[in-house]
Length: 120
Length: 155
Length: 334
Image 1 (tube, rainbow over the protein chains, first blue to last red):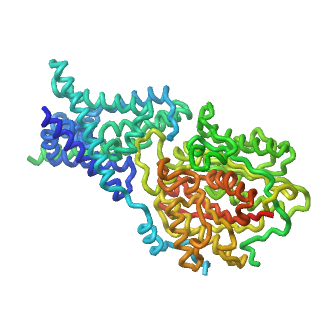
Image 2 (image 1 turned 180 degrees about the horizontal axis):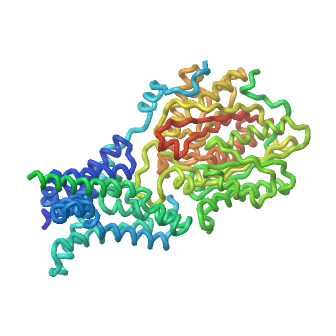
Image 3 (image 1 turned 180 degrees about the vertical axis):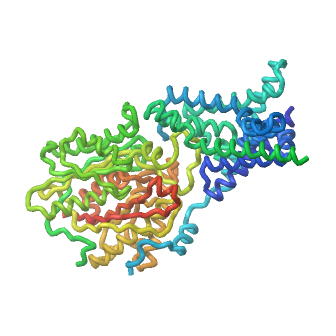
């Protein structure tokens, strides 16, 4: 139990640590950091490596945006083998649809209710 | 002496800036990113385990979809009450890279542009930061699907 | 004398000044010097742009009240801020019946406005009164040039904090004890700095260019002034300027040199990294602090060099370097 959480912590923390090194050394903005990590998730999934990282790190590997990328690629690849070209096109979006729809609903709702506040 | 010194790329000056600029606190920001990122992932794992404990009927793949959902809702709440930006100031990449950071990058422009109306403000700006991430991610997923197709036809 | 620096022939005087400072600024080292401190930087309005506009208008109204002038008594207002198309300033002017010219020089607007106003008054034979005013607001600048307020990002060590507030100055020929003695308009200088966070580095060469031209034209040494104060170079920018000036055999270390951006916040406790920035930065520090010292007589001659990074969102995305400008105004106690 505890060892699982330690693994989650170390894997998730290490991914973020790599991101921080990138930010510190290259001055990339948040959007570019997210793109780079998402893409690396897609690539690692296509190469078949990321599943091993998930097996080891559990949420430590799925919660970072890298996991989101691997989910996209995994969905597209499995749908492609089942349904051919249409599956290849739709599969990625299908797997992340829950998360995406949720974030849009959340965004619109909070945009209706809340205004941003100044920093102190 | 000052003529011709208005517009030029002065390498020596750019070098001087590099010398005089305050150094980024590498170690401190890296440790902060490690701990904040690790902690957020542990929250995700905890939700995962709680779901499995309280709803044993759910299959693991459903739970895997619920966890990011819960984290997105959590990040939305924290952004709305003005706490996530403070976590971000400390955690840096540790709060950008988890799925909560992705949610924050959508919620924060949404509430920033409330004052410009719902359609032209909130909806139009919601994906100002995360839009490129989605475009590239989805295009890459289509590519990986095609790669899978090609590999399948080859073998 | 070359046209670069203009020495005013008549007595052009500062009639009065007014300052309105935001919540963070009024917790800084200069808190007791501001005319009015705001507790809330939204002022109960619906947007930060409207709040900045209100702050700008209030500063001008405060100045009018202080001097007992009606808006009709003022011949011209030269004013500006950082927002797109001078949103804040234009909207502030809607309710003030004062002839108005909008001016944009980024954070150097205050110096440009004072220099222009002084020139106009110097050249006119009639009794003229001109108001120069600028405003800036952290939350309008942040959304325009950087990120949404609630986005979790880290501020880089070179970042500066846009000052919330407004400053206004009345310039005339009849009243006042502080004289505007000469002005040097800036040239646009760009030495290839591309990092939009490093505005101090981008502006230091512009400040150097204007300062050296001022010293050469007037045949003065930096020591001539009791205080030389730049607009918003920030801590590192000020260091860079000192170095640049030193290499050209003007030693600022032997003079009383400082920077408004360094003075307005406490770097240790207020988490502002390099210090303050924005047009209101130089306006608040000059009006509240330097002007008071001039009136008290603890200093007699001041050179204010307001500095501006002429950066735009578009130029930044197109990977262009940052042009900068600096305007110098020399003040003298009479």
